[in-house]
Length: 131
Image: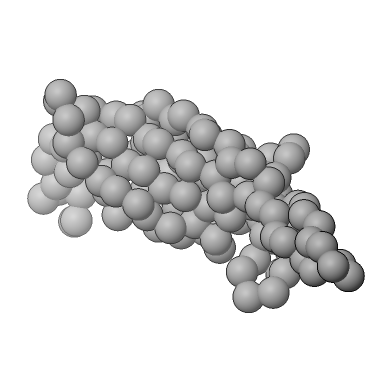
């Protein structure tokens, strides 16, 4: 009954495959979860493939903090970083794509814009510094 009233693009959207890798494992550290970088990267690439987007990664440098030691300070590596990801595609990002991105606990949306007949979706996520 329902499919009889759907036409053209509505049927394509309904019938499109949207399976992606399950949520990556994460390790709670402090208040923000630290996801496994390689698992998050696989999920982001799966989302890009399913949604017909190209994806680029800008891996962040390891976060550090200054810790007092006697009369001086030392720099302590924290083992995690903020990574930037950009999705580039011809279609506007849809609700399914946003829902799939929300599977990464530490991911947040930075920007969505249309430029030169392409959609750019920028996100950042907090993960391990190295693979």
